[in-house]
Length: 185
Image (cartoon, rainbow, N blue to C red; front, side, top):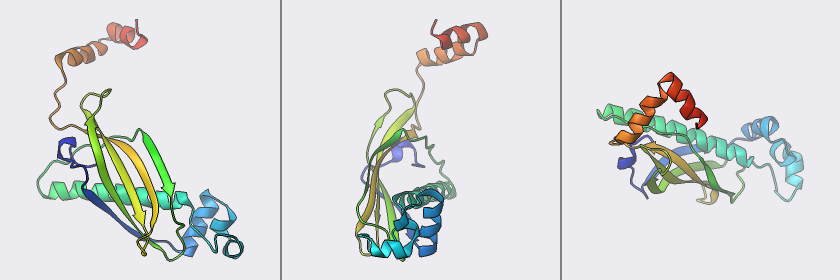
């Protein structure tokens, strides 16, 4: 999230935007990244139990991830426009769950949303907090097509490193001592 850890309210929805999937786009993505017949061949897909061409789940995820990154950059710009300093987002240590509920078909418009369900300070990385997020995607019929539970890092605004850690960090910069500390000696 592009807000400081302290400013993130669990349960607050963060709209990411919508995307309409076209047949051409579904086939292009399928051919490049997931070349199964139900993603690349409308005729074979029509004769299958899928009843027609469907988007790869990875296509649905990729579009959603792009929407998330774009929305976070827009939020950063919005905060700067208000004269506020945006927070610092960190990497994601992983995805805890991912589920594809309903196939995405040509012409479907999928709307994505991010909600931070919970948060806590990191136990292993000083100055950072963990965000427990859920991304959902629904089609134009309000059917849930995709959901994922993600974890991400967010920097704490008011974190002051304890003296013990500041000293250890300074010692790692001294050549001889730093090499010994990195080797665990």
